[in-house]
Image (tube, rainbow, N blue to C red; front, top):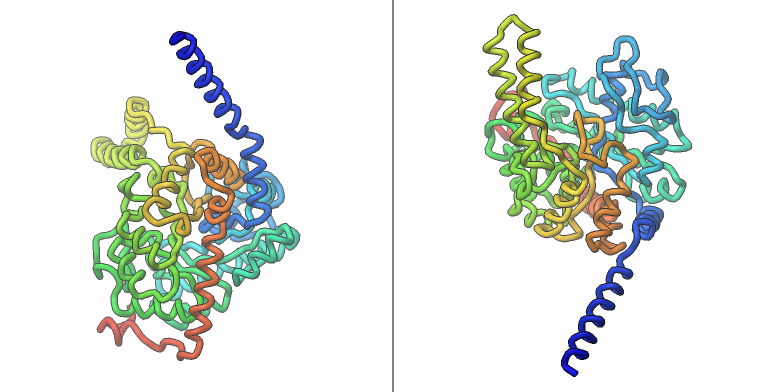
Length: 435
């Protein structure tokens, strides 16, 4: 009798396990769920460097290539410099369910002063010319309502993000002019420190924001421009969150708990972002996603410097030596699943209302396996759905959180419009002449 009971229990357990296996959603079902989410909520990517590729590859000319064609093997035009395929084109934007895209109007930190202002305006002009050339697919967006409207029309809402504080040339008037031209976020610093904000990838100059930097944040709040903290130091992150009356964003950053790159966000800052109602938009850059890749990149840079010293004036020997080193030290693989890990870590430290997506497509030399272009966002969402994310939470990640942060920023700006535009100068607040 006892044997029958044991056998019956075993059969019951097996049947329950079989039922559980049958209950697991299929890949087709997961894809259908994600498609339904993206039909309802615009997927908004926080950062794409395609405009700089237009400048470098196509000499700023939007008429010499067809964005409605496959650009994954696009070649530069005469006078163009960038090589290799592009990660962005209109067919892939639609295939990826993209409803909103912040196009970065990046310029290098080496361009400063009035030249920085001119170059930034030229980059803004590229974004607007692309939208004008493809009106059935792209539309300029300046508000959260614009994004929703364009998404319903089946077009990609095109927004502008300024990627470095050096681009305003220490001028509140230039900041306001960028807003008037359509910029809806500015990254406070880029690769190096500027005159008012410290970068994550430079030695501290201000230990956060200078007094003028804090005034810049205040003026961005008054305008309704999102304060972007990707690229800035942890001290700058903390200062900006303390000062800002509106939600901040990280347009393309990962979780530092998973990859100890200074460009990523520490858990204590993620907790501050939660209280600020901000959004951290997970980045796809391989060195920020994988700590093993980050360390490999550092080793490769060190070996490159060593070979340059050993074989000065001998480029062939340097090339051969580096090829031998790379053959002996294979580049660590980086995967889509690791990007999903960052999103889950951000959610763990900051909450589901804090997460977003900021790919950095066409601004990075390579991407994680499975995320090679703007058509691949649904694959990432399917991975998270497989991990148990609800449709509501997938919608928040895709674009709902960014829309909410933008609406809150617009509300703060409306309240602050009763105040006068800032006339603060860097000379008055930081005690230095305008540089």
